[in-house]
Length: 192
Image 1: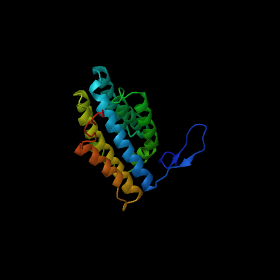
Image 2: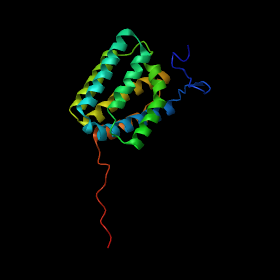
Image 3: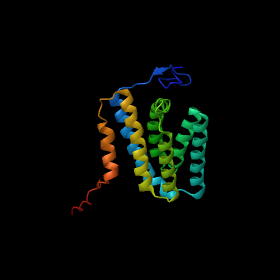
Image 4: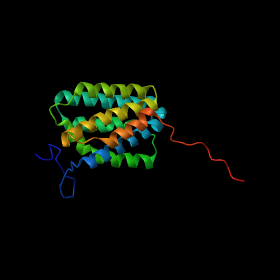
């Protein structure tokens, strides 16, 4: 029952462990997921093929069917596949980092989607907008939409874990993505 509620993590051949609801851990993991997924979208989405976009669409259809049936496990797996399929052109090193961060967050996602106040219509609309931006091969837009999508969910999670905790790392990550500051300085002059 605890595993179904998302409160413990039970992995094959490992001892079950309690899910940490330390707000600092959630905030840091959330910021990492937002930044990594945004970077990955920027570099991968412009290279998506028509077939890869169709695969993303299939994952969204699967999420919708699972939500109607109330099958949260199936919905979670389709959600993970939806986002992963948009990032197929990220390259192995970045994909490995994204997978690690996503694996850490999937337990929090499971906790989130078991709550009574999940706004399924809003989540579906966000996924639809991400799909449309993928179909347009607009990596920057997918980056921004994905960041907002994750930030809303992660801030909701923090509100459940500790309502008075300010999600400062999540907000900082969003400022970096949404404001698009120049992160690359001018080229250095070659010294003679």
